[in-house]
Image (cartoon, rainbow, N blue to C red):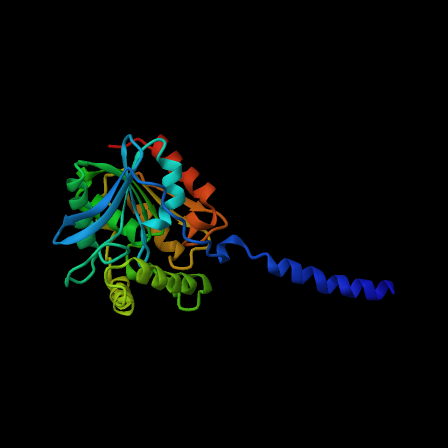
Length: 282
């Protein structure tokens, strides 16, 4: 009887352990944004960029990743709005924003950010970017440093060779499927997701192409941040960027992936708050 009980316990314990997935293998629900002080469609660069602002204080711009929308920042906005003027925007062709016939590119999308800043009368701001949003932030830091006070770049890459193969990642594939439903619900062109995905994928495959010399030109106070289980970004590229941006900080967040701000928002928000409070800006 004792031997039989041992066998049963050996079966039950692994099943229970297997049920509790580590958080880096999860994709928590997309948050909602809190009520905005101001929101609308800004006519910039020949398109309409959806934006919203929250709180008062020094301006902080949040830029989401490719295929996503500003709702992904819902938890971070709530952490920042008691202290800062938080500005979110849907990148061109993403979320509620429109686009034109020009192909997607980081330089073009960086110009959209600066045009929105002009529309909102924001001469310079701190920028928090995730993935494509972080690359856009690096582009602004490189070419228009006068527009940024500091940059928190999470899950960026400096070259397409820095992107890992995400084809077999369950979490990333779940995100792509979720992004389609969100695109269909929010976009002014809800039936064009497949074309949208193809064009964004082409951008990922061909941009950016920054050398060590390019990165060394950045003078904006910068943290290069990534997750220890990022499905999409190779660690060596993260370390390459941090090593070549003068004075850059390098932060690897534990127990999370490319979707850190959803998987462990307390950790992500605390890191951003620390960065904003303690890293001296321009």
